[in-house]
Structure formats: C-alpha cells, structure tokens
Amino acid sequence: MEKQDLLDCEQKWKKVVALVPADNVREQLLEDFCGKLGKDSRSRWKILTTRLEQAVQKNMTKQLHVEDEIKLQFCYPRLDVNVSKGVNHLLKSPFCIHPKTGRVCVPMDPRKIDEFDPMTVPTISGLLDELDSLEPAENNDQGKKIKDYKKTSLGPFLEVFETFLQGLESSRKGKLIEQSDIKMEF
Image (cartoon, rainbow, N blue to C red; front, side):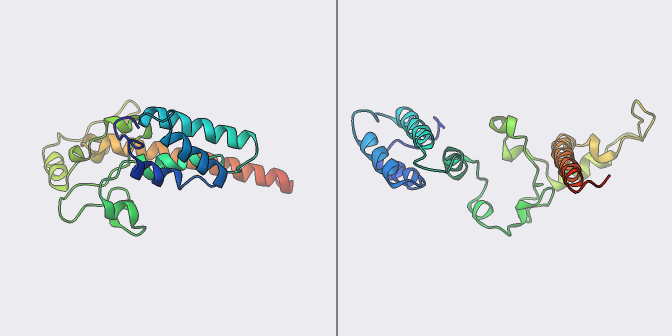
C-alpha cells in the first residue's frame, strides 16, 4: 500500500473514495482528505479504514468488504492491463503459455505475493531443457516414481496449485456433508 502511494493526490483519492457506497461517508472522506487530517497516503488510508469501520458499526453501510474491494481494485498486482480487465484472457488459466514470451502462467501463493517476480516464471523452452537434462527416474519415500514435471522449475507452482485444489475439495466435501445432514441422508 505504501509503495503505491494510492492516496497521495486528489485525482487518485477521488477514484478510491468513489468505491465507498454510502454518500455521507464519501463526503466525510473527501472533507477529511482535503483538510488537516489527510497529510499523506498513510494518514488518508487510516482515515478511510476508520470511517469505514464507523459506518459499519452505525449501520450506515451494509458493505463490510469495501476496504478489501479497494485493495483488490487498486493494489492487486497486474501483469498486463489486458490480463486484468479481460475476463476471457488466456492468462487467466493456470499453466497456459503466453504466445509471445513463452512464459508459463503460474498460480501465486498469496502469502508470498511480495516475493513473486513475473519475470522469473518458467518458460516453455526452459522447461523443455530441464526435462531433457533430467536423470533417470527416482523414487520417493513411498517407493513411487517422482513425476518429471515435479523436478522442474514448475514444481513449486504445481504445489501451490495442488494446495489450492485440496482446499477447494475440502470445502466442497464440507458442504456436501452439511447438505446431507440437512436432508437427513447418510
């Protein structure tokens, strides 16, 4: 947030404030930002979060996630404008290949987002070289053959994706159990 200086000038903060659903909260924020309270992005962000919390507590707005929506809209890393705004863009799918750069679209671990560098993702030619230079098949602790793709630079990204899928599967199982409990089906 600080590095992006999201609220450093009126032009920027008006775009952020426009996302606040309650008119009275928007007006108060604009007054605060122009006044003595809002000196820089950090102080303006603190004002914004405080005003949003107060609005929710006083039932002035039902939107509890305005702060998160602002962060996603303005702070989420964007590799490319077309990727971010286009719903059907190729790079919205994991493990597809960018036609011009040969880079592989990889899932990112949200807990390590600051460490992610899009210029270091595997490329298709690099992966092919890695696969060509692999030693003969190794076995893991259970005596099973380790899959070749897990030995490449794509391996850590596959682990992130598998972890994500396991979470989805667990939540889906939980919902199915909950539904069967409601229907009394066992």
